[in-house]
Image: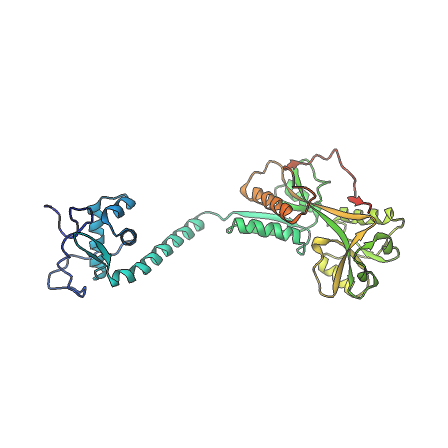
Length: 359
């Protein structure tokens, strides 16, 4: 075949005599080498493709270039490296020992280049951000949902704001938060919600307390005990749920004077024997030496909902809703799968203080 020199032959393999500047050892001979040019990433990619196909025609087709251009780039790469990477004749193409060794590094270099490009692209655009309101950092229901979202959107920046449910509702309506977690019965029309968990309410007591010996504690056993409620600004409906449960059991609760700002602080007071905090089960594992016991007669459940601004269809908010649904179904947080998202209307409310179930 005339007009072609170097590697390209007429049988589709791109075969011809070895370049004149290679000796048997792959070193330069006395023939003057053409001017060298810097190695290019496309040459690495072409070489890796050819090493995988061991056929110039198929490799050229994969790279969407003509066969002669592929042969030319491989020759340039070998000149740059001053090493023969491929043995080729009229019937076959094979990697030399140097080529096999170079293939490993070439693949790594291409992978590093792709990661670097992806990193640069991410840096060129703002990272997605989710502003999430949480009542207490110890709540495993919220932590599980946000962890699921992080797993599905690894580059998502989650900014947690620890504040009470009333503040969450206000901040969501004002656009200061993207999502929140808590009871939705007081949500304004601007805030949509979806129920994700009916969380049993219980108490925290030292493991040596008389109530710790019971698998579940009848609410009537709390009569005369100093009960620690949540800060009214953080979880007013949780407090209402506790008070109503006591009244349903036939007594007015004795309240511990003062409040604390976290479940952990409440557990520390319980460890001192000063009071009995009432908390949802999702906030129970906070301190060693303290045990959680669910309340019965009546059973009490705190309804956790995902809260978000009505009409917000951002990927971050949709990821939170989807993650909450997955966890609710997988962990049995609800008696049946979570329903479709809905915008809560304030006109119809079940009960002002929560869910009470007679056992």
